[in-house]
Length: 203
Image (cartoon, rainbow, N blue to C red; front, side):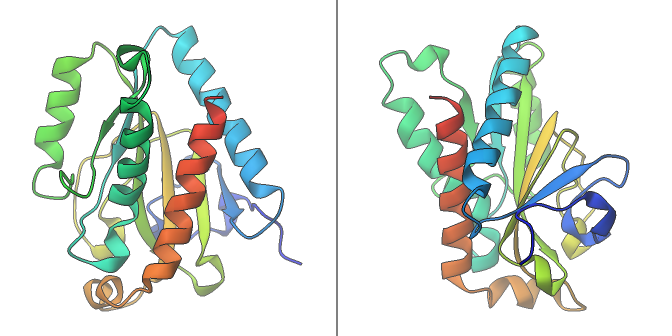
């Protein structure tokens, strides 16, 4: 049986991961994966608190392609939870939802806005990614910047103190078509796992 996480030594560069850091892969269908993912999220939350930095979730993607809506789906779930809190000012900020997506066109402007609103924010960036076939349905979590757009040959700024990706399909020559034809069920499962793991980390 394949482990619920694996070392970044097995990674493809197209999976949005910087080769300079160690990243864990979580198989969302493994029983212990959600517990351990939530534990890591709790650790990131404590790290932000120790550094007295406001936590920001930057959920990158667009609802115009099925495979690219991983980030906005997570953002939608997080925003609904945090905005319903009795103490919303103390909750993490969320940028990137289905109604207000953050994508290649407005990413730099959004990063500027985040730094204008928050002094030294602790940013956890997330995005859909393409990888090798056996990694489809995995979530990655690492303590370093996200490389958005690398799977579709776009040059975008690195962003994040930590990063999360959902591997939605296989990388190849026609990445845009691949994202358009990705199964919605895969993206929904990945976004549910990620949002639930983040929220469990805040309990």
